[in-house]
Image 1 (cartoon, rainbow, N blue to C red):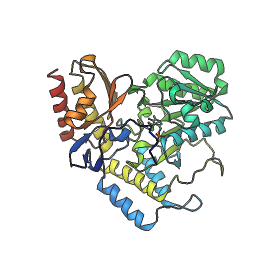
Image 2 (cartoon, rainbow, N blue to C red):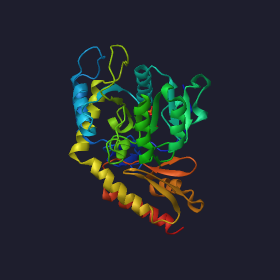
Image 3 (cartoon, protein in one colour):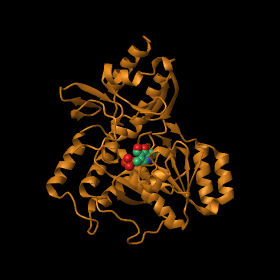
Image 4 (cartoon, rainbow, N blue to C red):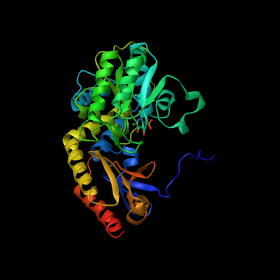
Length: 378
Ligand SMILES: Cc1ncc(COP(=O)(O)O)c(C=O)c1O
């Protein structure tokens, strides 16, 4: 049997990993500034996370959501505390797409409406509703096509106001990333997010903050959207939540009323997934990783801005993007092939940095030595 060939692959096999480094089968060391799509939040194989998962595995790994799984409440308590949303409720699933799928469904149940506003450059996942809200026709199958989703230009307050004026009473939800990830690290303006909040209040629509990539502390705020100083009604999250153990969740404001059977999942909220997510939050608190993400991000952005060949350096915390000019358009490949440094890309030719939130000075120096030797000799 062959693998279904949907991924272009680098010819690298990772045998083990530690912190911000991964090692191949010949023990060649790579600096990981991408964390496998922003997933590695507290560092590869963090000992606290590994030990807790091992201990839990020896006890019990899975039972369905038909019994009390105490770790779910422990996770809810800790997430409420660290995110500053103690009066929100938690629903657990397994991925980012599933988180958005459930958030959109809940918004529709809650408002009894069907229409959703999404934005150009947005990515929300590959399942039916999530992909229908994603601005990429190439991944929307005919069966996913719907007239229920309207795409508006990202950060365009006038377009948003006009659309609400015309059909605000039909809009179930607005779904937006705090910083667009796949779209190339595009930061939502503070006024734009505030306007979404105000219009959702005015028309009884639901503000869904897709925090799958930009959330869980990556920008220095627990949820990137909260930088705007207003709360969302539902926050969706996944990637960094389990540091590589699959888990997703939605954090739901108090006005939503739960009903038995309204949402459901087989695997969501398993013992192992909860233990992984609790361990991540414990490390975020203990190692002060929100502050680390903020400070290290500022340092990196300031230094990146000094290179004349890099355009539009952008982002916040450890979610950073920039566009190499044509003369150094092979920068990402050279970082990987000559300096063993993983970074991410975004169309048309942006580089994305999404390292572990525990990124240290040594790793930053190593990265900038490589950048200097490529860019200062170009
Ligand atoms: C902002 C955002 N939302 C949702 C998703 C989908 O997450 P998953 O791949 O876990 O389904 C992604 C994945 O890249 C994402 O970046």
